[in-house]
Image (cartoon, rainbow over the protein chains, first blue to last red):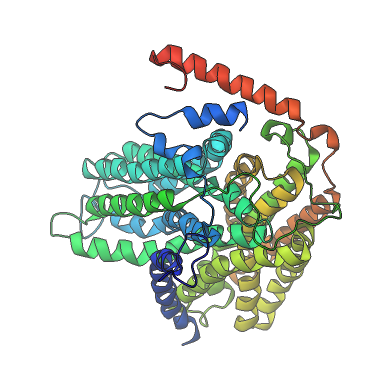
Length: 42
Length: 487
């Protein structure tokens, strides 16, 4: 069955995968930086 | 297909898959695949902002636990980053047209080779303890990777998102600001793994990071696509009514350099960056000296981390905002709000308001990031989409200049004040007023920006001339390589 979210050839999963590929490391880095930044308020 | 495009399309060979013609999206390609492809490159080259984590370990390459005679000094190591940023600006300018005409995949792949190659050469320099090789590797070769990588997705994103060009380029350039968040903990972790009793682990960390970055950037190069000629987003209708400051024409890259608009925007970027970059490097020391005893070194480090988050977030926020309020108005906000905030900082110091001080600088730094990310869309509005990447490349030289002026202004004025008896807590006040003054000049430059005169617009015969030049170039290349043109 074709993906109902498919937009002219690119599947939703491909878009999700592409964003996860860059989003996960970036999010981990941002969380780490936020943890360090919290020291300002202690 | 124009003659020039045919020439490009026919250039195959071993690296034929890198050609622009091979990256044209098939019907139905989802444009939301392109920002992650751009981020693959920008998140990697954004490591440059985190290079300082290597500084201390690199002063102990011989002594291991502490610096030994013959170990490199921090002042010598500081040049690695400076060379890389300087080369970034000039390689973006020199290779801009090549990037624009060759397409994003070839540019991203080249950037990956240079960036990863720079790390590998630097690793070799570290392992034989030769600083000149590190300068050459990370500074020169890696700096070329920075410049080419930085501009490589810009025009592609603008073409995919004609309805939201600011947001699109803001996403990619946000990645450059965010790259340090990944690189900094990754570098520290890798060095802790590779560290032994005999070496500090910098060289193997460089090698590992070079390989990781190469992989990430090549993935981006393979994912990226350019829209087919005439493509436009579903439901998008370009504005029919002509907008005064948004051209529908294109300006050739070298012609753009002859316009006052290019140089006005060059100064706007240079002044905005000078104002921001000057305080980035001094934020930790400044917060501790302005609030002695109240801001500890650990809290200051937290402040620097928070500033880098606002630097990244501002890139996306302000560039996206510019799609709604216009580029010129966005820069007016940077200049006016920045002026008020810089003037407020000494007052915050005088009344001892740490929260006010932090808030002022977080907004300032968000506008510093916003200045970078909004400028590609400003250029697109002025000069059209065709050569916007190449023109952006030339504009990046403003960053290189600001990278020298900003820190020098802050450091030398502070030192001058301290040696003339000004208390440390007030030593930055003059600097803040000078930064505010720079933004007044930036405001005037922005005020003078008008639409580009039509004599600079490209005409159909310019296309023919460019195609002829491209064919002549291909023929010369064919004679040199012994292969027929287009083989």
